Image 1 (tube, one colour):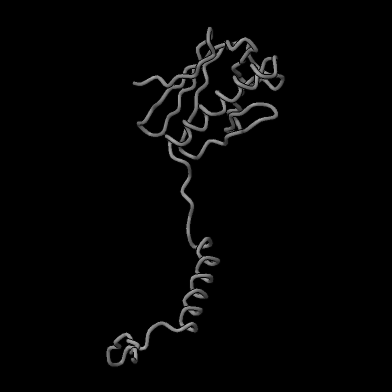
Image 2 (cartoon, rainbow, N blue to C red):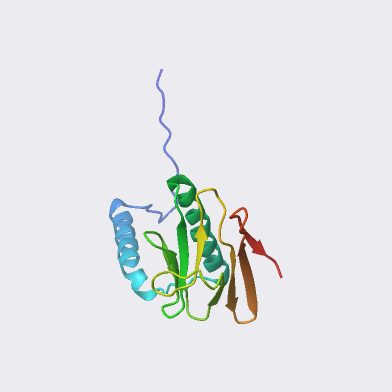
Length: 154
Protein backbone atom coordinates (compact mmCIF):
# COMPACT_ATOMS: atom_id res chain seq x y z
CA UNK A 1 0.00 0.00 0.00
CA UNK A 2 1.36 3.33 -1.00
CA UNK A 3 0.82 6.55 0.88
CA UNK A 4 0.85 9.79 -0.90
CA UNK A 5 2.27 12.94 0.53
CA UNK A 6 0.27 16.02 0.10
CA UNK A 7 2.02 19.20 -0.85
CA UNK A 8 0.60 22.60 -0.06
CA UNK A 9 -0.85 24.27 -3.07
CA UNK A 10 0.99 27.29 -4.37
CA UNK A 11 -0.61 30.09 -6.20
CA UNK A 12 0.96 30.95 -9.50
CA UNK A 13 3.77 33.49 -9.03
CA UNK A 14 3.84 33.13 -5.22
CA UNK A 15 7.38 32.75 -3.96
CA UNK A 16 7.00 33.26 -0.22
CA UNK A 17 9.34 34.94 2.24
CA UNK A 18 13.00 34.15 1.86
CA UNK A 19 15.65 34.30 4.54
CA UNK A 20 17.43 37.03 2.64
CA UNK A 21 14.26 39.13 2.50
CA UNK A 22 13.74 38.69 6.22
CA UNK A 23 17.32 39.77 6.97
CA UNK A 24 16.88 42.90 4.85
CA UNK A 25 13.74 43.86 6.77
CA UNK A 26 15.51 43.33 10.11
CA UNK A 27 18.45 45.45 8.93
CA UNK A 28 16.10 48.29 7.95
CA UNK A 29 14.43 48.20 11.36
CA UNK A 30 17.85 48.24 13.07
CA UNK A 31 18.92 51.33 11.12
CA UNK A 32 15.64 53.08 11.95
CA UNK A 33 15.96 52.22 15.63
CA UNK A 34 19.43 53.76 15.79
CA UNK A 35 18.57 56.85 13.72
CA UNK A 36 15.10 57.59 15.12
CA UNK A 37 16.07 59.04 18.55
CA UNK A 38 17.86 61.90 16.80
CA UNK A 39 14.69 62.83 14.93
CA UNK A 40 12.20 62.40 17.76
CA UNK A 41 11.84 65.28 20.20
CA UNK A 42 11.06 64.23 23.73
CA UNK A 43 8.28 66.32 25.20
CA UNK A 44 8.95 67.96 28.57
CA UNK A 45 7.13 66.48 31.55
CA UNK A 46 3.51 67.54 31.81
CA UNK A 47 1.95 69.44 34.68
CA UNK A 48 0.54 66.20 36.08
CA UNK A 49 3.85 64.29 35.75
CA UNK A 50 5.71 67.10 37.51
CA UNK A 51 3.15 67.13 40.31
CA UNK A 52 3.51 63.35 40.76
CA UNK A 53 7.32 63.65 40.84
CA UNK A 54 7.20 66.38 43.49
CA UNK A 55 4.78 64.32 45.59
CA UNK A 56 7.13 61.32 45.30
CA UNK A 57 10.08 63.39 46.60
CA UNK A 58 8.01 64.55 49.59
CA UNK A 59 6.71 61.06 50.44
CA UNK A 60 10.21 59.59 50.07
CA UNK A 61 11.67 62.25 52.39
CA UNK A 62 9.11 61.34 55.06
CA UNK A 63 9.92 57.63 54.78
CA UNK A 64 13.68 58.24 54.88
CA UNK A 65 13.22 60.33 58.02
CA UNK A 66 11.15 57.66 59.76
CA UNK A 67 13.57 54.86 58.80
CA UNK A 68 16.69 56.86 59.60
CA UNK A 69 15.42 58.32 62.85
CA UNK A 70 16.44 61.88 61.99
CA UNK A 71 14.94 64.93 60.28
CA UNK A 72 15.03 65.17 56.48
CA UNK A 73 14.44 68.41 54.61
CA UNK A 74 13.01 69.11 51.18
CA UNK A 75 14.10 72.47 49.77
CA UNK A 76 13.10 74.64 46.84
CA UNK A 77 15.72 76.68 45.01
CA UNK A 78 13.67 79.23 43.07
CA UNK A 79 16.70 80.69 41.30
CA UNK A 80 17.66 77.36 39.73
CA UNK A 81 14.07 76.04 39.64
CA UNK A 82 15.02 72.90 41.58
CA UNK A 83 13.11 71.04 44.29
CA UNK A 84 14.83 68.23 46.15
CA UNK A 85 16.43 66.92 49.26
CA UNK A 86 20.06 66.74 50.25
CA UNK A 87 21.49 63.33 49.27
CA UNK A 88 18.30 62.56 47.37
CA UNK A 89 16.39 63.12 44.20
CA UNK A 90 16.17 66.59 42.66
CA UNK A 91 13.54 67.78 40.22
CA UNK A 92 14.24 70.57 37.76
CA UNK A 93 11.00 72.29 36.90
CA UNK A 94 10.18 72.32 33.18
CA UNK A 95 9.84 75.67 31.42
CA UNK A 96 6.38 77.14 31.79
CA UNK A 97 5.73 75.51 35.17
CA UNK A 98 5.99 77.66 38.27
CA UNK A 99 6.23 76.44 41.86
CA UNK A 100 5.46 78.35 45.02
CA UNK A 101 6.48 76.87 48.38
CA UNK A 102 4.74 78.12 51.49
CA UNK A 103 6.54 77.14 54.69
CA UNK A 104 7.44 78.67 58.03
CA UNK A 105 9.60 81.78 57.54
CA UNK A 106 12.32 80.51 59.88
CA UNK A 107 12.64 77.21 57.99
CA UNK A 108 15.42 77.85 55.53
CA UNK A 109 18.53 75.80 54.91
CA UNK A 110 22.13 77.08 55.10
CA UNK A 111 21.77 78.54 51.59
CA UNK A 112 18.59 80.46 52.47
CA UNK A 113 16.28 78.17 50.52
CA UNK A 114 12.80 77.57 51.99
CA UNK A 115 12.27 74.01 53.16
CA UNK A 116 9.82 71.55 54.64
CA UNK A 117 11.16 69.31 57.40
CA UNK A 118 10.04 65.73 58.00
CA UNK A 119 10.68 64.28 61.46
CA UNK A 120 11.45 60.75 62.65
CA UNK A 121 8.04 60.38 64.35
CA UNK A 122 6.34 60.87 60.96
CA UNK A 123 5.29 64.46 61.55
CA UNK A 124 6.48 67.45 59.52
CA UNK A 125 6.91 71.20 59.72
CA UNK A 126 4.02 71.45 57.27
CA UNK A 127 3.65 73.53 54.18
CA UNK A 128 2.07 73.91 50.79
CA UNK A 129 3.46 73.62 47.29
CA UNK A 130 1.43 75.21 44.52
CA UNK A 131 2.22 74.27 40.94
CA UNK A 132 1.04 76.53 38.11
CA UNK A 133 1.11 76.14 34.37
CA UNK A 134 -0.92 78.69 32.47
CA UNK A 135 -4.43 78.53 33.92
CA UNK A 136 -3.85 75.12 35.55
CA UNK A 137 -3.17 75.03 39.27
CA UNK A 138 -2.64 72.23 41.78
CA UNK A 139 -1.60 72.28 45.42
CA UNK A 140 0.15 69.67 47.53
CA UNK A 141 -0.23 70.08 51.29
CA UNK A 142 2.11 68.55 53.84
CA UNK A 143 0.16 68.13 57.07
CA UNK A 144 2.26 69.19 60.05
CA UNK A 145 0.85 66.74 62.57
CA UNK A 146 0.96 63.59 60.43
CA UNK A 147 3.46 64.49 57.68
CA UNK A 148 0.99 63.12 55.14
CA UNK A 149 1.21 64.63 51.65
CA UNK A 150 -2.19 65.31 50.12
CA UNK A 151 -3.33 66.90 46.90
CA UNK A 152 -5.78 69.71 47.48
CA UNK A 153 -8.37 70.04 44.74
CA UNK A 154 -9.54 73.40 43.54
